Image (cartoon, rainbow, N blue to C red):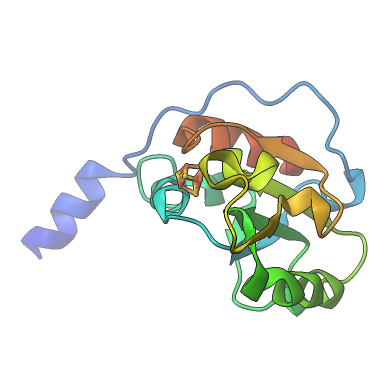
Length: 158
Ligand code: SF4
């Protein structure tokens, strides 16, 4: 009972929501609620730590209508991290094809945008844009959770 009282008293603890994004979402049909499938195409896992933070209690991206889902068939958007390694090139292409239209691809982090520190490495097939069409880029190595949240809010418009 004491725990229940404490939960009620504490309420929801998250960063205060910044103002709504002013720009129109790139795919207005998806505005309001965007289901996201994350694909690690060869990341060092630094970007994944920031994604975990974005969907954790501090930034709580779900309150803006962005949700992570387990299957590309349930998704509206792909959130791709890392340079695309040779072993992940086909997997990324197939995952992209499995997402129903209309869909959005977010290249998250410098590696996803332009291979970053892995540019020229023997195992790297290219940036995300070399394999699938990219709609939104989030720069940074890794990007700040605030910037990732902002990009996701740009998709949901909330
Ligand atoms: S952008 Fe930086 S943190 Fe993200 S996968 Fe590349 S090296 Fe790692």
